[in-house]
Amino acid sequence: MEGSNTLEVEAALEAERQFVLTLGGFALEIAGATLVTHERLPVPRFNFVQELGVGPERQSAFFERALDHYFQRALRPTFRVPLPVAAHVDAGLRRFGFRPRPNLLVLFLDLPVRRRPAELPPDVRAATHAELDLVASFWTSERERPEFRTALDVAWSHPNPHERLQPLLAFRDGAAVSAALVYRYRTVAGIHAVATRPSARGRGAASDVVRFATSGDPVGPDTRYSIYADSPRLAQRLELLGFSPARSFQEYELPADAALAFPAPGPAGPPQWRPPRRPPGRPT
Image (tube, rainbow, N blue to C red; front, top):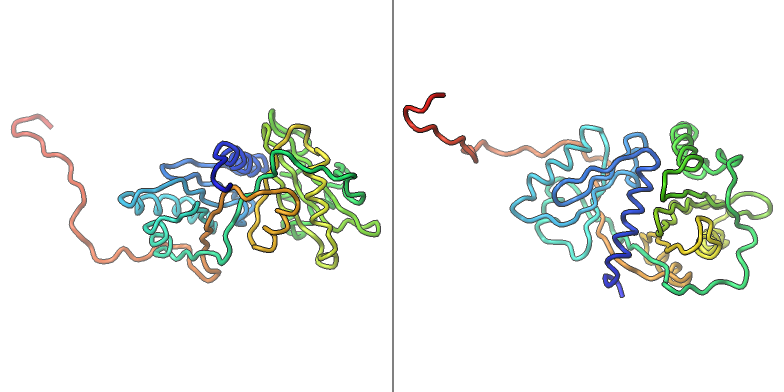
């Protein structure tokens, strides 16, 4: 049941943060949230606020601190807020111009006892380092590719202790048509960035990649797998592949035309804090 496996969920969220860090990003913890940031990969996938719980009396300082962190870097973060969303958090995000995405973001975990297929998908395999450029081409344009390629090469070729990164490729008629990145941190692995060439969509290649990831142990045995779904259609497909919903988030994002600036503070008011006065006769 969703929400009943807190330790497994927290391990999966930690593995996701480590995935961003190993590709060159960083995470900053403040009261109420973790700010995941990657300045050289300026996309929401690598720049998001994982909300952990913010009280109504502290929300103004929280939002200003979090947004200042990203706005100084000209980044547009998303906010991930676990359900149920507190009314003051929703109101605060809307005040700063953020709007909820139409679909929830759902974290799925594979079932403790997986049904292994009789045989692995025949057209899916682990990528080799000689295919690094091919792997990187699934997620980046030529302009962005050098930065992502370098980060991917370092994490793949020179992993830190307790981690392993393995790209996967699926083929149709001899051509690579789908790919994913499987990143393991300790005993939990996330299946990230499953992508399929537009001309090959609807032929099951993406499902084969996910099935291979959970059944072929590309990052080692005794691994628990996680993956995100951001649409009901994808969620249904993951359940058929042996995953179960573990936690749901409402994501908030800025409209494309929103300026990276704070709203006007309004008319000036009295100071909210004054330094204590010194007793008479006390030296300064």
